[in-house]
Image 1: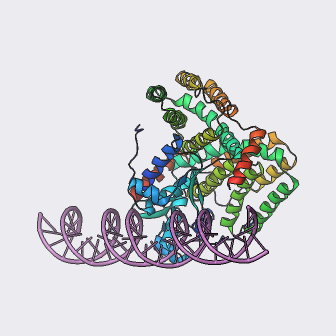
Image 2: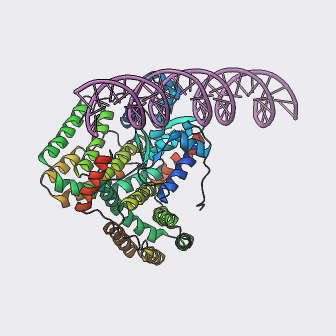
Image 3: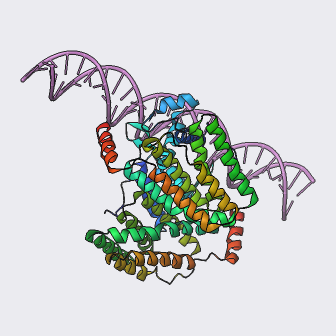
Length: 228
Length: 228
DNA sequence: CTACGTCGGATTGTATACAATGTTGCACGA
DNA sequence: TCGTGCAACATTGTATACAATCCGACGTAG
């Protein structure tokens, strides 16, 4: 799999490039994406930029406000909960399927993902590590041979990255390095029950490590209301 | 809820209008959607049409082939299975949540859906009945207060309509009038277990009433290969 | 000093013109 | 007669020009 930057002269490539930047926290929630500015940076016309922004809008990564422009999305607390609800429905059962279908090559690919993630962390590139951590989840759906679910998971993972940017509680705690390793072992052992259970608790851990309590909820929603 | 035709001068409205036509089987899988033609019909420029077609492409309702144009999607057998796999993961648990949260008004809305569906059937508008039948599923996700999942279900239901158009086995069998009625009763009784179980078996019934066997699979995939 | 209305700049929404690509039909040759 | 190559046509891809809308600054009145 090629994890380098995509070619950015086409609408889809530009969208992927922007999505990656958002996913890696190089673009913060609420950041404005001016059509002229983006177009000049990538050397393409506004037509291409608009198509890319529309695509990202469908993926809920950018918020398209009529006559006002495109902004990196700021998921609400409610939306954050919904995203993890959806992930909790999709991913555990999919991990079970992956465990039952994984080939040796699949497991090797998962190990490569982890290695890349650790390398990025050691290099101080936390954003890239987060992106690779998300790609791990998508890869599991691909191993399960479920492209439709994989597409959903890909979107939910990207949105989760925005949620983490907004509501992550403890910054020093590294992003669960154990969970993915345990998951690989369960999958390699073809243990569907364990893989499903591990994925479920992994997602629950992720959710509970977020600051979605009612107190901060009102505070943030107030800020959102004032910020318009 | 307003189930009439949306305004078709904006990209989103046009996309919804086209999606409804696809969902109601007024546009068949494989039909070409020429930009000029669609634009002339709705009295808008190609710019708007292109945006609408892009949106439908993201929802997997149209297939956008570069330099060749937009065509109503023709889901493969594999994709058909994947769509129902995803629905099986999302909808039963969501039906349970809906049963636990439904208000009297929600249940009344569901009854109105059924009534409209029967009225459409009696009027001989089978396509519209199918559309309303799908809207019933989306409504359940809305009652469960899960907009994110509802958006996924909406897409999956629309794709299911294409799958039905391609692979429906017995034409005379009416689209499961009992299942939805039983579901309402379970939801009205706040019986989450029953609602989840009914939804699961309802989806299974739907899947098994399709012609996705390996025999027809090769035949259809051959036709697809030849049709390019 | 504050509140309101108006004007100017900037940004997006839409339409259209031009370029690039794919298709189709015909002519030519084997 | 069948297959191939070319050429004209039709359709989509992209860029740009113009229109519509929004935001902010300035000035004035209370």
